[in-house]
Length: 193
Image (cartoon, rainbow, N blue to C red):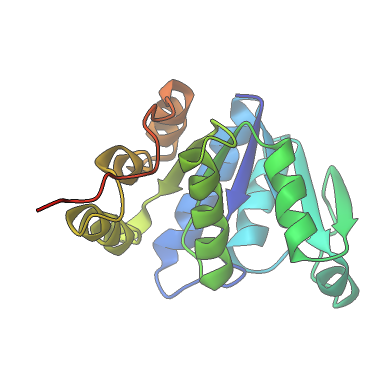
């Protein structure tokens, strides 16, 4: 694993543990010599993880949209950055650069990015690991939603369980190194009766 794409909030959230864990993950990524790719912002948890990786001597690449760049959201100290035309091209570029993905707590953008890369794994378009730093059990409701999707016949258990959830940054990176893509198809045979 040479390059990780991180999805996370451009806000800080209400619990100080979100920023503390973002710092710890950024440091651990840098210590392991893994390139950190993220949305390029200096705001919220995005800024926190970039700052901590940079402070540890890590390589941090930002991929930011023209709109957010022009609004002044770009982190000024990145190793390098790219400006894309829109969100779709930004996500595609971040995915191209990734060997695996980690989501930290965040809002709609984080959820959307996380679910897109999981969907691409489910469809077999890539076989890159997907994980969440589960600070303060933030992602437990998502895990419950996946389990509900399995119970209701919309999702296979293997796809529900492919998302790694871990509270400790080091343990999360270790688990992601060992991650294997599910080898089942997405489609479920209809129940006949």
